[in-house]
Image: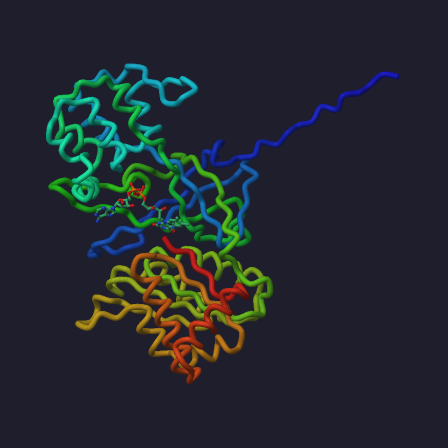
Amino acid sequence: MMQHTAVKTVPTTYSRQNPFQAIVLKNVNLNGASSSKETRHIELSLKGSGLSYIPGDALGIIPSNDPELVDSLLKEMKWDEETLVEINKQGETLPLKEALTTHFEITLLSKKILQQAVELTENDELRNLVSVENVNQLKEYTNGRDLLDMLRDFGPWNASAQDIVSLLRKMTPRLYSIASSIAASPEEVHLTIGAVRYTAHGRLRRGVCSVLCAERVQEGDTLPVFIQENKHFHLPDSGEKDIIMVGPGTGIAPFRSFIQQRAVDKATGRSWLFFGDQYSASDFLYQDELEKVQQDGVLTRLETAFSRDTVQKVYVQHKMLENSKELFEWLENGAYFYVCGDKQYMAKDVHNTLIDVIEKEGDTTREAAEAYLEDMKEQGRYQRDVY
Ligand SMILES: Cc1cc2nc3c(=O)[nH]c(=O)nc-3n(C[C@H](O)[C@H](O)[C@H](O)COP(=O)(O)OP(=O)(O)OC[C@H]3O[C@@H](n4cnc5c(N)ncnc54)[C@H](O)[C@@H]3O)c2cc1C
């Protein structure tokens, strides 16, 4: 008997290793002209990718470096941009300029890079810096400095371009909380990206991916992307549950997604958003949209905290305290509590304030309030997406 071999068409699955080139449909600044911040609202097309996501997931972007910074490196070292360099242990090669632009991290220094670079220079200062007794100074040096600083500070170099790129780490994708619901915007994904810019050691530094998105990506261009699931941050299964969302700054992103999804689902549970930023006039991200969903009843309550509008700085946690009685009632009623945004300060302050609220309104001890929150966490009713 003849055997038939079925020809299977395997659908392409896009992933971190095989990113989808998503077309940029929209890229606008959400902040007003007087703001000290720049937050981009970016809409990307997922058409033809087969990619999907649920509210709470993140999008990974594989960025490329600032061409000006790459040129400065080439100039500093008098390197020929066409020189082929090996980019991995498998021996794959790229022309130097392309390798520095797309393949390697050139903005972050590490102790390891400096320790290995010692072998490539006669510079005594670097030798001294990496010695065991100077470990703290070494760490300090890496803070706010990049490859260009190292090359400028510790020459003359006895190294080929290959020697230097071999020290570098492969570019890591940047993750962004998805700010849309695919049910509300089919085949699209929206992001809320804060441009990272700061001056350190006399030079303006630019975050690789956020500034790529803010300065160099135009509508019609493409970005290599993939979906990063987030199993620990998602809406309750039931639309009847109440949700409390605390998302100042870019922390608003997943909550825009949550609210859009709840609107499509016609969820009956109440929703309460705490948003904050510097000035209401220039930094009220998505103000029109939020006011509209509030009018429509999709968003039950909206509390805002604009820290620089008043002499006394007001943050989201102050708004939580101001509303502690109702907040606790919502929790007692089974509400889910979500936090997104700054990990270093905001998430800690919100966490402590939540315990304050439970302690005060539950008329209980600190320990019991902490246990209450721990219980909520175990039930999946306290979820955080902080970075
Ligand atoms: C799950 C998740 C979700 C996220 N969601 C969002 C989101 O919705 N929106 C958003 O904008 N970001 C989000 N981020 C952060 C985002 O992934 C990037 O980290 C951010 O955009 C910076 O990336 P970059 O490439 O622009 O900067 P990079 O080139 O990676 O530089 C950032 C680094 O610069 C250094 N740095 C920054 N400021 C200073 C300073 N003042 N002094 C010295 N050093 C400094 C720090 O080492 C910092 O890690 C999320 C992160 C995670 C993990």
